[in-house]
Image 1 (cartoon, helix red, strand yellow):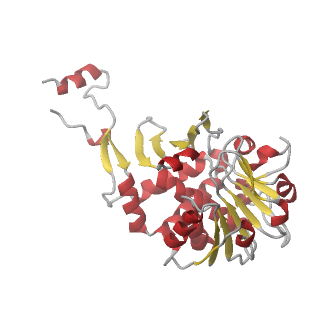
Image 2: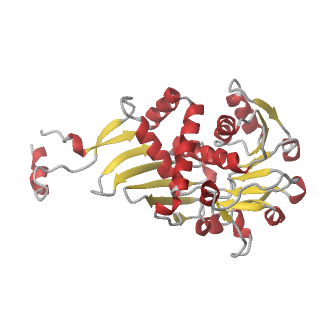
Image 3: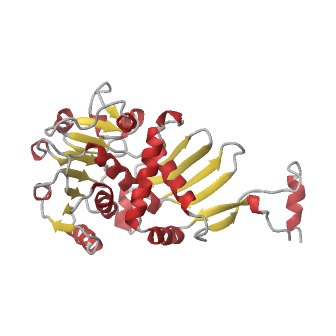
Length: 348
């Protein structure tokens, strides 16, 4: 039987290989590298195709496709969000992604993205905080201590110099889990019993809860002046975490307004409520933090360009690592017009 040619083999990064790659690079340096790639792509934002993610909603959760292209490389991510999965011992979010050559349409990378999405989400949060958080911010309240909490904390340490994280979750077991996982990573970790306790002395407030509902994780009286809010849990229609009054007091920064107005905290506001696009801050076209008393709010829902950046980063790290499988994913007939002839290679 004829073996497929090398040009028909596509690198596939499995979950195991992704974990090995992260440890080979180091989680701190990888978060820094991802943030650099994401910021570089935000700075060339206008080159990309942009569309809100394509979502299929059900009573149980959502399945989404997130496509984009810079004109040379095409990328997409498949991702789900099913909050009930935790109760069944399953991941709330799973994902995989693909890069392809725009010139010929051939895939050039297939990768797991469950772990990579956690890393890119955290890297994006910290990249934004680097631009918007108060100068010298060293303490973060991490409200919601599920699967994303450790990544968020370590990204803020690696990229923003965070030294202390104050943890709170309605489930004390989640807080114990997060505190144990962060031990030995150079952070002072404080476990708290109320969200009010968690935000004491914190200049960065991160909310990351999973329930698919309108919720009020932060009430208006909990948020003082001068803080940066990193709201990453509101990521689909009907799911929010902040009291509307907080939004009216904040300068709001978003990835892609047509998507964020559907899925983010700002779905609670009028459609013409002003927001600033992050790419404009990165390029200097719009101001970020302009005063010590300003409340900055990153209404984070995740956008396809961030996944594109993460896949691009992974592809660039793979050379000489061996941390991928070569998948026989593409047909390679000797004559491109003779697909049936290729089929005959496998005839008994």
